[in-house]
Image (cartoon, rainbow, N blue to C red; front, side, top):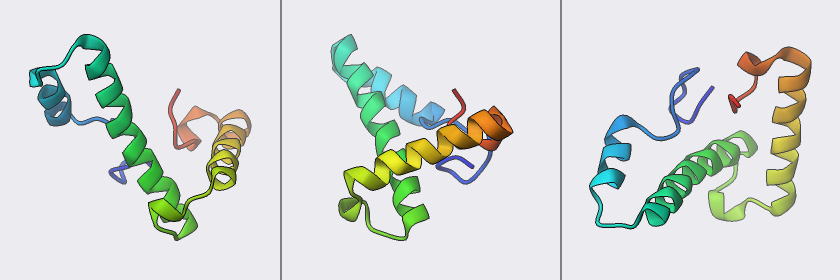
Length: 85
């Protein structure tokens, strides 16, 4: 599942992307803004899986989550993993 709880949805909605495009930012700043918004949504998902607040996530928990998602992708296929890349 994705940050919105639906398989296959984007980390950045079309509305959010349009808001970033409309912002008075340089291209590299727009990229970092998109990355930050997407990262926030991913961290919210990881924190929810661990049952903790985002600020209580540890580096080890984040690494372990990525390892678990990568293992799911390798063993069950990309559609079974949270991250679809």
